Image 1 (tube, helix red, strand yellow):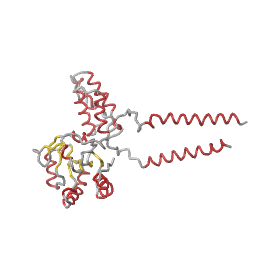
Image 2 (cartoon, one colour):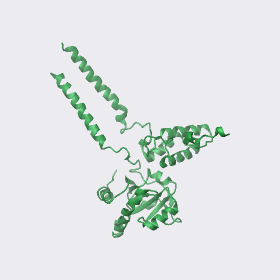
Image 3 (cartoon, chains in turn green, yellow):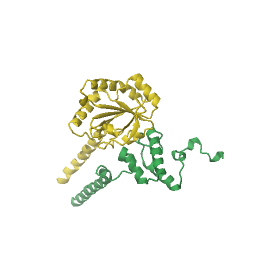
Image 4 (cartoon, chains in turn green, blue):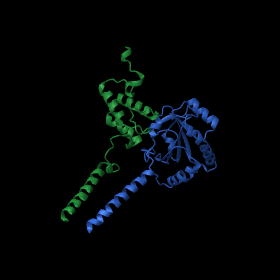
Length: 124
Length: 190
């Protein structure tokens, strides 16, 4: 029995919650890893012991128990804490630069590079 | 030659663009997140107040008044520093005509009723009442990160502005008063 008790050192937030079934456990684990703790910004909700993260985990747990979907739960959090709370930002006009900026830079680079090439070819 | 001009201008323009980006970066405050609640109605709630635990209030308190909502806790040191400011503001408000007064509402966040009531008795109570948010659930609906935080809510119950951190006389005068004056004239702040 002793061996099956998780030691305090290895205890993860998700071990503190019990679920009716594996689906619920999966949704819970997925959501708390996808959401960022807004207080300690480099931690996910699953890592963080900040009071707000603890509250949000509890709220997410309750919603999982009521069989809310992953999307509904994430919307619940982003409605209150904004897109910043998700590690996978949605595509909208504010995040467009992040998504398309690199491709635009790549195109500019290619244009400059091809100009450079054609120039060095044409000049003796 | 045409190419030569480009080859001179390209490094310069890269330098300028990078310079502008980095310069902007110096003034960014990545911890000051914009509230996702701006422009939204205050959440629906029904909670008791610290001053009178038997009294239940709902979001209807925000109707027809411009409100300033201060989220505080007895364990919050910043709130202690800020408290004097709220007392002064409440005193100044009492001198105004009733229809011009701001509604000062407290939200006591993650606290015990005993500690919160004691704090207001001992330190003075600037709020018309303080919503008792024992487990932070109401705060979550307001998108609260921590204490102190202050929200400005317009006459229709729409959240117009949020300030994170202590409010001082200077911040109040230069930042919040213009916003409140704008709201009174029907101008939105977000």
